[in-house]
Length: 74
Image (tube, rainbow, N blue to C red):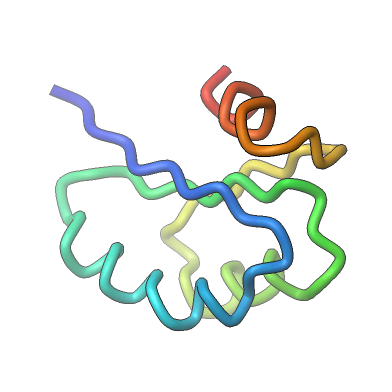
């Protein structure tokens, strides 16, 4: 069985810093993805620096919640 955890992010570096450590720690058997919805903050750089095992999907535009997840899940 393959498990993926997908977190949609838009300008949420502070929230990623707060919650991503626990998600990674308790998702050892899963692949964790951060789907970035065209953030203008340093969210992507933060994940790359502090969570190199987390995969990043960079959406080119912020299409909102549903489109962001649908784009990421493709």
